[in-house]
Length: 458
Image (cartoon, rainbow, N blue to C red; front, side, top):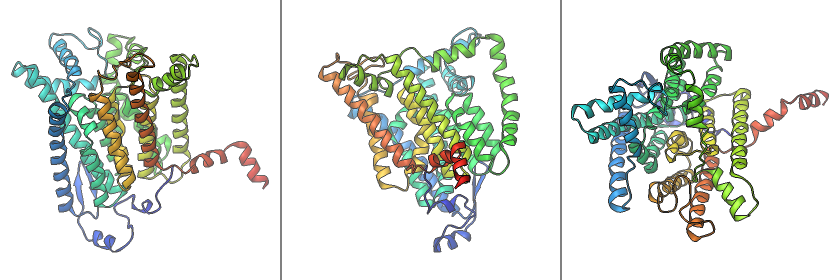
């Protein structure tokens, strides 16, 4: 992965970048929020930026509802809310999650459910529960916007940091899923963890990561990368100890009781929520299978393609772990790239794919393309493609498990074309965001025993 030469010196707001603007920033007061301080920042301007971003994020949510229902005559997906509400009702009736009834999410997912259930039960209204839940998710979305802005100040100047947060605030496809799913909550915790990490609040970062993992599993992907990033100023051993000091007590309080109530819950959760038998048609796995089996008629089974994709995921994650370990100059931008690619790799290679997974990695993409006009244009293009995919085309071109048309028909090819465009567009977006140069691959190859011996002889 490449680093921009003109940005590498701006990883700390206390460090000079270049030019007359830096001399001006040195005389400015610091700006503090969420327990982190940005030095050399115009506090008044930062507050104006954040206020505008918050208002924009809220306005966009109303616009999404209006355009989806009134302009495109599509639907707002309330399907998951009935599941959330039923879980809260079961608990109110004295049932224990995981033991007395199945719950497909980690325990901290119940936090926003219970909070939204309070006004719902006070007014005895399922509609109030839904509105309360959406309100909580919008709050989480606002926290994500603020985190992007503050992290952006570690990478860029105030203007480009604002652009990064603006991109996320106006990401209309992401906004749709903020209103209809709970993924904004664990993503909010993940972004807080990254914010604390890049501002050298490592313990707070670990706490937010562990809590995020207990809300939904995907923030756990960031743990090894964050630990390696923090180890640049301590040691990997010390960071593992710090992480264990936080995760073990949390596990004892929140995970062990569940294991006592139902010892087999871990295996059932993994098999039910991660390794699912159904392969969704909006995945890269199914798209590759459609080309190989139906278009090219090669007789490849979908299980073989799925196995290949999971193998690719494993190799990609191992490669990312390796370059995170060998990189001698771990800066904030490098960490953001690792998180963007690792989370995207997991989403891309999974055989089960809900469209709201785009929420997981979009904040990192916004941070990486904020200084690139082609990247910004491509970002909005992918948002449009995802929005067309869901909700506009769902039920018309495809369902979760099948294209609407029979194989070989025009409807079938339209669905295949949509998902092909989606896959290609996101791959290009990630390439533009990360801008790999091959330097880390050469670095890893140079560490091979044979290459090291060759260098010695030379």
